[in-house]
Amino acid sequence: MHENVMSQLPNNLSTVWLGRKIEYFEEIGSTNDYAKSVSEKAVEHGLVVIADRQTQGKGSRGRQWISPPNSGIWMSIVLKPGFGLLQAREISLLTSYSIVKTLREKYALPVKIKWPNDLVYNQRKVAGILTEPSADGDSLKYIVIGIGINVNGKEFPDEIKEVAASLMSESGREFSRAQLIADILYRMEKDYEDYLGICSLKEIKNEYSRLLVHAGKKVQIIRGSFKKEAIAMGINENGELNVQYADGKKESIGNGEVSVRGMYSYA
Ligand code: BTN
Image (cartoon, rainbow, N blue to C red; front, side):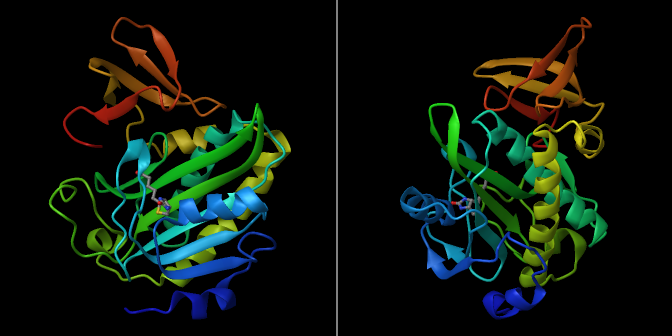
């Protein structure tokens, strides 16, 4: 489907403030980099930047995010929250939660979360989130939430084909990216407003934990070259992963500090 996302999207959108201004590019380096550069001049809360193709798509941990044309959702959202830097991580988890809930409830896709914010379908990664906050001391100036979703992609380069998949490759269905973007933004706006009421993941932590691909399973906690086995229990209200080691000791793990892997594969 060679869909013209920008001609469809405004008709589908039913948000109040999120995505009421959209900047669309056929091709761009990185929507996150663009969103950050405009926000350095003037922050527009709710601005959404979308590209059909990225030439310098950025993944987490300095990796590249492969973003070919006509196949995925490559978008960045700018928020100007009235809270501190610590909450940036929670917003990242909240975003993965909103996307997973949309895909499960509106599209009946059995997608799960790999903590902290990868989306996994049949043990393969279909989406990732790269959140880039900009702060003045402890207070946030703005936050850019970069969302990459492999939607209708059919082929993946050798270096990622063992772990990557698209919604189409796993479900056999083709999706309208414009409709999917509209559905995700609608859910995010609602979840974000609920979050603002309490500024914690208290209300969603149980449901988020239920959607974890590793819930109740053995994982490897990797800190540099040090690996340890644990059982993943779920998240706490700050978005840390609660794990329990074989000796019964419990720990809450903050994101960025470690990476968590399944015992035998990526998920
Ligand atoms: C990850 O590695 O899991 C995070 C991937 C984030 C990719 C998205 S695509 C839109 C936005 N712009 C970027 O350069 N990266 C993010």
